[in-house]
Image (cartoon, rainbow, N blue to C red; front, side, top):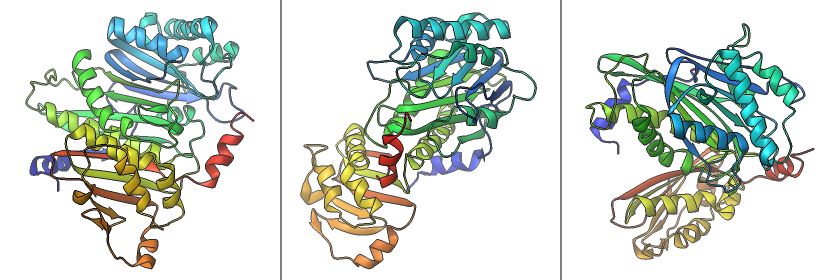
Length: 412
């Protein structure tokens, strides 16, 4: 049950499911087709009218893609960005020194086009690993950044997609210091999704007044509860990254953890990132169902996170959910190997609103009724493993035959 303060903040949020990274004041986003893909848009950008505080969270894969390395270095050294460009279809990963130079050239060309210092331009790529970027097409893209006719937020949302079947974006507004603060988000991701993050790119913008150090604190906390709590197939990519820009145009007093409404800003940010994370999980390659695992009673939040992720990561659980099979034994198995602190006699499981385990023992239930419940496209698994205070939720999807079909021919 949500506490009263959480309900109050939720009531204060103005949610726009048509919003995106161009929704906050002073931000523009766009995209168009440069020829990296056959027809669909494949080159996009985000631009702030003024220099913005910046923060990023990056993949833990040791083979970090070249654009990620370049962008991470810029943010670490300068804490600001004013523009971000993204290409799909080609990851520019495992491309060595040439890949790094290509990412830097992209950055330089955009900086020249927009009359910015190069370190204020972030770059990101997604797509096939191991191929060099066709730099003639990339250069053409950089020459058209911010051109009339291409500046539409939905164009950006489309340009960053790979195997996604839908765009993923929204914005929220909340009042801070009597000023309307907007947070917008756009993401892509469908396969190779697993904590920590994966082939997913997330972009968040806000017109809030907040410095990079505090923006980073807010972003890391939010990502831990959202993008780091999703899984599709257990693989972690070379390119995933979440970038956050704040340009201060809302004119609120500077947000810090000591600000009286810091919690309100964080709640709004978490609403955005969790919405995007669940949209990614729901759009998993070949997925037909969004699966949510909610865990309570763990020793601490970290243990709860491990258990929740173990459930949604289990291929056996995912397969059972796809087959609409009430095989709760697969859930129990995933709980049992996630933590040595779990006490079987204190474990309770509810599957699609039907109690199936109590005190570690199977309960009688109507198989046909539960099968009907499992036909829904959103399935929730609730688990209580004891009397601890640890709670967490993780998000995943079912494992379908189409997942094999999509990934067996990804390069062809």
